[in-house]
Image 1 (cartoon, helix red, strand yellow):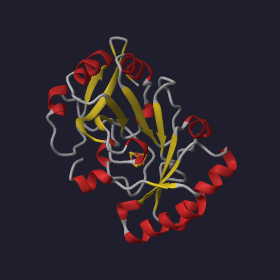
Image 2 (cartoon, helix red, strand yellow; image 1 turned 90 degrees about the vertical axis):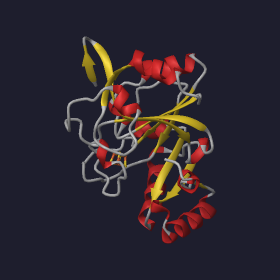
Image 3 (cartoon, protein in one colour; image 1 turned 135 degrees about the horizontal axis):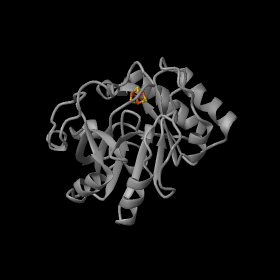
Image 4 (cartoon, helix red, strand yellow; image 1 turned 180 degrees about the vertical axis):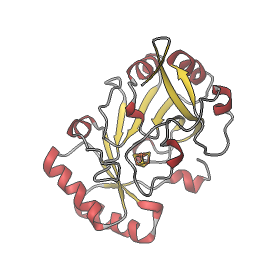
Length: 226
Ligand code: SF4
């Protein structure tokens, strides 16, 4: 958690309007706020530029709002300023992503946005306590035995509205079955083919048929948007 003058500041790496491309909210116009910081260390992570909180002095929010290319620069933004910036956008669905957004207490931001008529979703690895408004939608992508050595938390599984599991090999399907055996079955399970490869997709199709799970493909990539 970043503090400035006693106020919570969130490290915002990206802030952009798009269409949510994955899982339950697929197709929903959304504003994405990508927070900086993650120590999970997934080898295939496509947002490695968000990992380092000490990369550079924080940038002004204006620089982040105009950012076109991924980079490790971020702005330390107060909840008040973030709510103000969000009020200028068209969508009414906020996606908090990262990095690992649950490194931070998201309760005040999510509560204020929901009170203002928004829906709020967080995408998390399940390795941090989830501090967010109880009405927020929680998407957990379990990251197990990653190089960062973080532990997957049972409370994340219990809180999840949906599980979105990246699948690249049969062991990933076995991991879902192990998690269900250990923690119980959550409301929704989505399998997401890693890199949308043919092999991973076939694996997901087979497992979804067998276990009556769902498949999430990264539809934003088909739409040519981020
Ligand atoms: S948890 Fe997410 S942001 Fe962190 S390393 Fe894994 S994929 Fe990347």
